[in-house]
Image 1 (cartoon, rainbow, N blue to C red):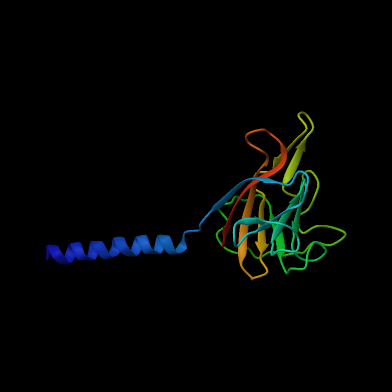
Image 2: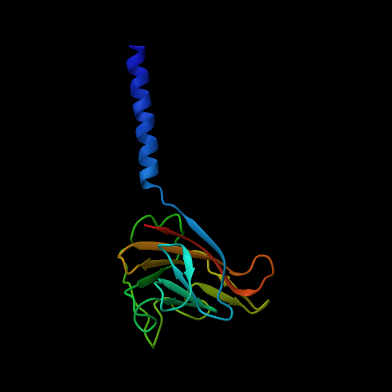
Length: 170
C-alpha cells in the first residue's frame, strides 16, 4: 500500500513539474541596444540585433521612436499594439486588441512624451519608460511577443538611446 501511495505522489509531482515547464514563458532581456547614432534593428526570434533594414527584423529603435517592420517602416508584415495600465507579468496570452503597422502619419507605437512608451522629465531632461506600458508585437511569422522597455540609458556610462528591454513569446 505504501508503494502505491509513493508511486501516486511521484506521478503528481512529475505532472506538476512538466506542466509548469510547458506553460512557462522564457523571458529574454537585452541590455544597451545602441540606437543613439543609427537605427538599431532587432530580430525577436533570434534575439539578436541585425545589421540593417535589409535583414530580417521585427522591431527597430531610433532615438525615442520605435519602428515595426511593416507599413511605411519596412517590407515585413509585422504589426503591433501598445497596452496601457498593465504589467509584463499579467500579459499571458495574445490580447484582443487592434494591431497596427507604421504609416507616414503615425507609428504603430505612438511617439512623443506620454503618448507611447516613455515620458520626458523636464526637471532633469531624462527619458523614462512609463510603468504599465507593454508592446505586443505580431511577427511576420505570426508569433506574438510581449515586450517591456526597461530603460533608455546605458547603465555603465548613462549614454542615451541605449535600450534595455525584456520580451517573451506568448
